[in-house]
Length: 492
Image 1 (tube, helix red, strand yellow):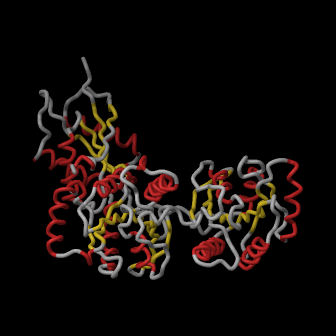
Image 2: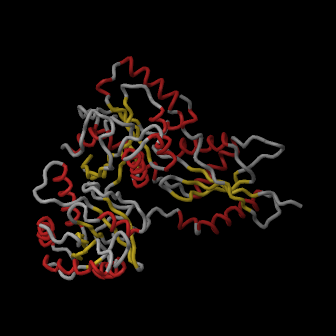
Image 3: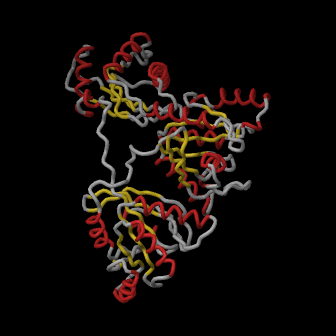
């Protein structure tokens, strides 16, 4: 096992920067660099403001109906991409999944739900409960019915739930693929929800008229939380059978997720609102990623893709490692994936109840040897079986998120860079010595810096700058990205 499984440093994008000055004077170059930064990123003082205006809450639209009526297909049609899982068997969708969408300039959140069934038990009852929660939280509802089958008892049961909720409802008669089947849609007037909107989610027929009617019902500001608001999202990652689902069940205080000793029990990402440290958190249990995605097949392959998508939507990743076993290549690849996606990182060493003193000594050596590139990540020793140290998760997650969102004022950053370059200049290479002229933090989540330089900075020096940034400003639990803007010396 080698360290090259983890990236040496954040990917660096080098963009040629050419200014109009021929002077090599430091003051002139610094002024030109600052002007270029302002031209690219705007007013730096305004850019450094910490009190950013919050985005308004978006209207939320819940898509509900009994199993296998085409809800996920309709969701994919509206958002314009195949993101929701679609198969020809009922029960594929189990959890509420939200997608950002828009129509004619109106932004809204579209919430796909699992099939609602009357008198459901077991997992089906949990799916139905999720669908009912989606209805109560929505600003409008798309009630999808299979027009080729007609209204069933389950559909009428959903109507009763909708009437209790008191939200605006549009009745969607799906699978009306041509004019001959439009007569099937008219029979749905019997549900008492007004005119059925005949559509074909598969082919797009009638979807435009449906969306026109939908956006006319939406309020200007709804209940949907934007990416920057609401509970923080935590993705539970780990190799198969490391204890992710057991940890989620322990945090939830109930058997929320199916747990089995057979690896690969979890297929779809499972969202759960957890109260931890007197606050709400969205925990997303994901499928265990195999060593290489291409080795998976069937539902395992798709589960791996969904896991990656869940990570990209999360804010912080809690990567579980089996503390009772040696670190594996899969563990390192997962940590590398988190760094590449730019998410905050906390490492949880699970099954700590199985670790004796000898194993602890070996584990410390493995961490020092294998996890050099992520030493900045907080570590928590937990046991999903016994509940050990669950309270320590909140401080670790908070620290990682704080580091992920840290912003350094431009003036303070450049004072730091001036001292750094004066004390430790870049080595001379080929008779030239690159200099850092000016720096600014382009963004947070993760912290991304742009350095205006007179030449290319070697990878070793970029790692040195990153290390000193961490020593000076923290950035606990967060990857750092360094981008370069190079001023090539003008040829005469």
